[in-house]
Length: 153
Image (cartoon, rainbow, N blue to C red; front, side, top):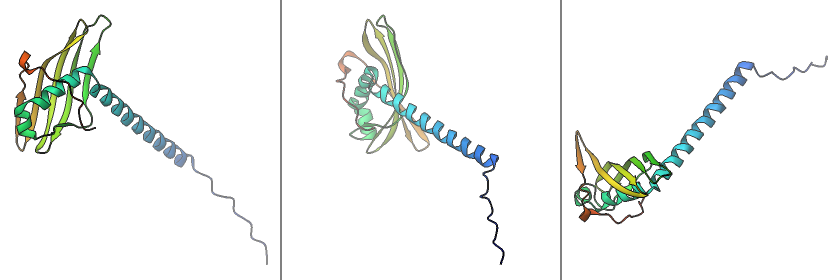
């Protein structure tokens, strides 16, 4: 009986290696996008304009009636908070919110003058079936909120 010659192990084709490398890069890219989105959302939720606007939302009787209590912030708050060195700035934030009775989206607009943030406009859009309802919150001096830490993540 003749000894059988061993076959060399199959070589990885360049096409397979290229596909695996592309898949790895795509996976890393997705992880970077998720991490940066998480970080930006978290930074927006920690900002003074967000805290002030969220306080208006949670203390509004019409929003409480529509969503129930407690009203919580959900993930992925988006928008911009711009602060300049001379104490000026502005913010536009869009925050998904929810309560026991439903969900909504709060839009917060604020300005910063001489280092002090003022909420200019807060509205809550409620999606109810085919109907959407917009609640514009009053921002008079009597409606000054007590900033609360938003619940939820």
